[in-house]
Structure formats: structure tokens, C-alpha cells
Image (cartoon, rainbow, N blue to C red; front, side, top):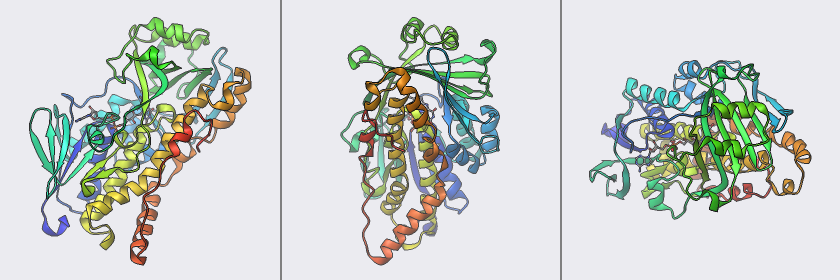
Length: 455
Ligand SMILES: Cc1cc2nc3c(=O)[nH]c(=O)nc-3n(C[C@H](O)[C@H](O)[C@H](O)COP(=O)(O)OP(=O)(O)OC[C@H]3O[C@@H](n4cnc5c(N)ncnc54)[C@H](O)[C@@H]3O)c2cc1C
């Protein structure tokens, strides 16, 4: 183990988004405390570490991890104060209440809907302040090669680098995943118009720090406050046939005319029309994809590991993808810290077993969240099989019933306790000589269009 030889352990993080930067910080946090010599390099394909526009809702599970990294105060300072409600669901045509879901969020550790740029800037700044990793830009990773000792990374600029461990945090179109897995992003049947509008331009806006979702058949319009509640993040979802949206990409470069938003949300109540009035003249038009579940997140004997959207891209209907990537980083950081310092004893001495431990802790939960995200989108738009033949009015009580408790499993898991349980069960199995099957997947398919509420 590294601690005995004092050789710095070399980690290459591919992708400097929320998942990659959080992962670098978490590994540094868990390893630097134990005095483990490390070199972490983050390789980002873009020319700078930057998120464009829009917001991201961090649930309390993810916010808790940010606090554990001693960045919680900063997070709260740009997310702003909350006022005891997570979200209110409204009828599309008259804004009548369907259900309003309270949340305990007056404590220091609380929900943190925020601007993606604020979050990324905070993570990048912390990496730099702490000397947690070297940040590279313009480094598009094209693939990896297994070496006798370590892994070689190949970049688009024809240069190479070597590391003992490569962590693929390169998003839903991950080049690393594509090297090991033959699959493609799956179109959800939905696209989303995205934008950010100033709250103060909406006279008498009544939902100061709440998310609001107006629900209709095949469409739903979501806003949530970001930037100290000074702005509203807008995501307007609509179901479209694949042939109509063939040219729409998952990218900020994919834009449209605002009149498309008016047309698709015709009949929605005045607050929605007022928000559309404030959207940019060319809002972003985003294709919503996810991935099928992947049973294996580690390759080359544990020397290559997938994390975040690269491992489990999910639809945005629970606002959980970024939080799940942060959970990955936290658990991987703990597992590596214990492996490299020898804390976990003889059971996790290899990278292979350490990678298995990371996967065994994270995969079942991430896949359940993927499945629940699909199910949630179908519910909000009244597209579950049991709702398809029902009228709008008949669907309303079903939405109210199915949304109330949905976030419990995402927000309330004690991640460290789960990690310790899975680790200790693994250790016991090794001690008793029984082998371990990796967790099985397959739950995801049940969430797509079958009306099954995965909770
Ligand atoms: C409409 C929408 C709304 C969402 N809302 C929420 C929300 O409210 N809450 C939430 O938690 N999640 C939300 N998500 C999901 C969330 O955005 C993602 O789950 C999260 O960003 C994943 O982080 P990541 O770091 O794994 O991937 P990404 O954020 O995609 O970052 C990947 C990084 O890797 C870089 N990269 C890619 N390929 C390479 C390569 N070959 N070499 C080097 N670098 C590379 C990219 O440039 C990028 O910087 C939403 C998603 C969408 C589409």
C-alpha cells in the first residue's frame, strides 16, 4: 500500500464537472487527513472550468456532503434561505393547488437550489485553495490503456499521461464508459426549454423560496429559486415524438425561438406566461436522455472507475443527478482513504476490491434513483400507463398521492452508515469464505412507462 512505500498515489480524474471536482475534493479530504501522499490531476476537455447558466437543485443528502467538506456556509450563502416548503404542484390552467410538500430546511444543513456556475466556482476554488488537485484544461480524453503498473490516458492533443487510478467523470457521453460498454444514451421522449429569469421582474411572486411545478397532460413547467432567491431557474418539459426533435441536442448550443415555448405551453396559467415573457428570446432547448443501468462501474482490475453521469446518467425529474455524483465521490474518497492507509485491513488491499466496495455501496442506490427519476417524469405529465386513459381531473389525486413521499429515499439515507455496513458485511464474507455477488440491476426498466412507482 502507498502509505508504506511513500510513493505518491497518482489519480487522474477525467472531467471537471460537478462530479469530477467534488470527487477530487472528497479524495483529498479523506486521504490528506490520513497523511497519504497523493497526486490528483483533473483533465477537463473544455478550455475553462465553467458551467453555463441554469440552476441545479441540491437535496439535503448532497448538501450534507458539502458541509462535511467544510464548504457548507459558502453553499448556503449563494443558495439563500429557505422557508419550509420544498415544492408546490399546481394545476396548469388555473394554478390551483394539487399538493404542497413541506420540508425541514431551516437548519444550517438544508436544501440548496443554486446556480450551477456558483456551485462549480465554489468547487474549483476549493480545489485550488486546498491544493487538492492540478486542474488541466483543453484535455479531451480519448481512451485508456492498461499498463503493467497503472493506466495510460490518451488525449485528443496526441499527448498521454499515466496514473495508478483513472476516474471517469466525463458525463452522459463518457468516452471512458464507451471504451468498456456498448450502449447509447436513451431518449426519454421529452425535451426541456431552459432559462433563468429575475424574480423581481415578476410582480407579487408568491413562492419566494419554493419550487413550483404546473402539471398538465404531456407537459409540465418547473421553476425553482436560485442565487439567494433572486432568480428563478426555469425548466419547461414537453413530450415530443422522436422525429420532431431529431436535431435537438443535450447541449447549451441547442437553442430555439421563444415562440416555441409559448406554443407548447399555450393554455398554461398567467404566472407561467409571465415567466415565458422573461425567458431569453432564444432559450435553450434540451434533449432529455438517460442511460440504462450498468452492472459494472470498474475495469482494468479496479484501475478505471466510472462516477456520476458516466456511471448512471438519470433524468432530471428528482433533481438528483448532481447529488448522486457527489455521493459517489464521497464514498470513493472514503474507500480509497481506507484502502491506501490500510485501515480496512486485509479485505480491501487491492484496487479491485476497493472499487467493488465503492460499487457495492453506490450502485443499488444510484440505480434506484435512476428508475425513480423516470417514474417521476411520467407521473408529472400523467403518462404512466394507469393515467394514460384518465382525464386531467382524474389524474390530479394520483399526482398528489405519488409525489408526497417520493424524495424520502433520496434525501434521508445515512450514506456513511451504509458505507460502513456494506464494508463490514464484505469483510465478514471474506472472513467466512463466502463469495459475494455484485448487486444486480434491472430496476431501471420498470420505471419507464410502466406506471410503477419505484420508491
Ligand atoms: C435539464 C436538467 C436539469 C437538471 N437538474 C438537476 C438538479 O436540479 N439537481 C441535480 O442534482 N441534478 C440535475 N441534473 C443532472 C445533473 O446536471 C447531472 O447529473 C450532473 O451534472 C452530473 O455531473 P457529472 O460531473 O457526472 O457530469 P457533467 O456535469 O456532464 O460533467 C462532465 C464533465 O466532463 C467533461 N468531459 C466530457 N467528456 C470529456 C472527455 N472525453 N475528456 C475530458 N473531459 C470531458 C465535460 O466537459 C464536463 O465538464 C439536471 C440535468 C438536466 C439535463
